Picture 1 (cartoon, rainbow, N blue to C red):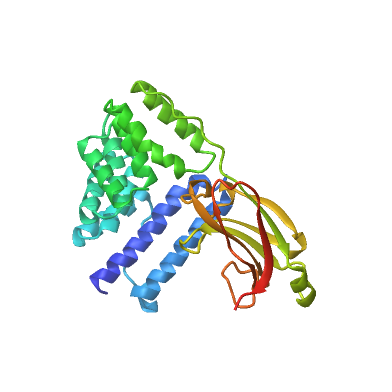
Picture 2: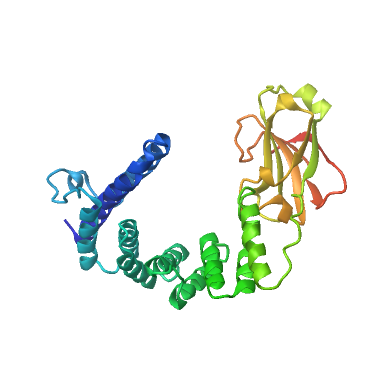
Length: 336
């Protein structure tokens, strides 16, 4: 068996062992969650086998022993990393396993190695910074950890954990105004249930810096939309009452992905609804952040959100937000 295949199979087995040990406490309270995670891991193992293995490689006669405990898994992975020291994901897995075993100094060193091998991976950079704080007796982010977090944000400015940890590091260093500035972009990224507690943390940092609290949060922008079916089309078309109706707002002149969308049925027409941030399928892209949108309605007999020939559509309406009044849409054209 090749060294690469041995490493891949051993790594997959270690993932299964570590996951089994770490998920055991969840079993009593969330069996469906545990089963779902186990299924994902199993599918990942099948994918790994299809990419790098053959049926014989996974037969019992293969000489890869299944670790029995987390410590055994760590020892196996340490042995593999001694043979294959240039695998960042291996070092990352080792660092996570060591951290879950409360071996924080060793976890810090393993994740530092992973960060050196993957300087463009913001998740690994953030985990390496967090590991340094956990290994510190006072749980402080040192200058190296701060540099790792800044590097992660440079790679991915919207990386939420990196921004949160950097703000904590700045607060620890007495840089309260800087912490508030670091955290403020997160308000546009987090969900509605998290935003109030985040605003509290930002306001505390601003107060410590001698600054005024943030202005009160504006009510999320809503877009009043009325949808009707053209009576001539309704008379000609044979439409089922359970056909799906999508009401969509998307960035004007931008990608076709919706900023906000609601799903109804043809029997619900005429519709009188309000699209808002709660209808956003993407938490990082919300209607309240848009200046101009296109709004349309589409009847999909298949129920598929992707437009298809034969769908019935309204003419898209271009709207500047906040809108001064309702948007009226009439579904009256067949998509070619």
